[in-house]
Image (cartoon, rainbow, N blue to C red):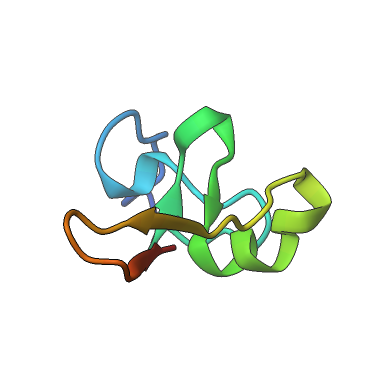
Length: 69
């Protein structure tokens, strides 16, 4: 007998989107059509063209700046 449970395609919910690299549904970044999990994104970010930027914001009234990452 054929097992027919959970065979139809998912159009909503957690199983509707998968990481295109490893196939997991957890920690998915779907912005800009990436569809990568956060772990695969960190491995491939420089290849895709993302650059990590640090910005120093001057504090209001004090001479020390705060670093935002």
